Length: 268
Image (cartoon, rainbow, N blue to C red; front, side):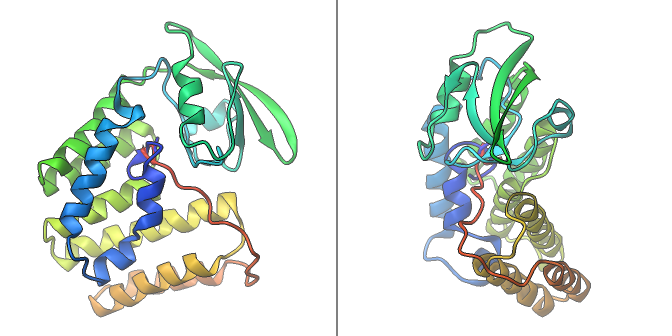
């Protein structure tokens, strides 16, 4: 799932990198709703949303093909967070090419029971055979998210984002980010918005720890901005919980890139 914005579409990653819920909730954009609508239109016209894939893509990955989030069933079949997608169905993926893994998925034969995936894990290539589950339900769930945004139906967007994550099989910071933005555009009360901001930060830290288990200054600032927002809006317990989570991260700040959060939902 793309995924940048929602579950995982390839553009989702752009969405998450461009905006963070903390910044979005605290700062005022000149046209927050317009920016969100434009992103949704790009997603709907992008390569992920043309038609369902031959098999469901059970991962949230970035342009470097590094897996960030995996639903439980795919994890049970051997796919892990931090795995790097090397090939899908015998077709090589290309580092830094936004739609590389997507092109490989589209090339899979229809009607198969399983499909082959090779990942790089701890410097070694690992071959997996994953179940070829239908992609239609997730495809329709993500389309529902983007369509709701283009219609500026913010409550529907928030509901659709939650449904998309349920269909994917795992919550993702990218999709929660979409939900936060739609809730904010829908002028939800701070009491309703605060739990989503907290949930986003928890998901972000969990994903970061699974892929790059050392704290990064940009992520720390993003979470601390959210902590400040939560404290100012009567959610002291949630703010304290986030501070505790941050305290459990290693103190070293290596010069590493932030893990690639994808969409779609594909960001997923």
